[in-house]
Length: 152
Image (tube, rainbow, N blue to C red; front, side):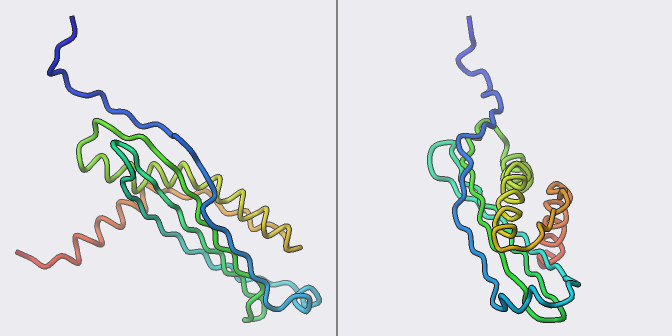
């Protein structure tokens, strides 16, 4: 017989992964294709999450790739890769870690594939973004938040 007050077992599952938004700009086409190619790649990552139902969370990974050639814009790609995750039975700290590290890490390969695909369709070579340690980024963000809090 199961106990009625037994603790809820932690649960984290993917409900859906989807492309929320994608943008590609190549303002200097076609002249950019005639230049010697020495790209400078800039990468920006952001995540946001929100609760959308009981134990249901949307996490959006926003990845922007800004490529310059000869100090001028070659192209800009922005992808917002979304996911719906069921998360239950976690302490608040564990929930924040799941939303800030695990979920974005799950979404990143999909975002990377979408970025490479759109860049290739723009007639550029894919960027091939390296894997990202979202656990380290999450811990760095926590440390930064703690450092910014005023001493009590």
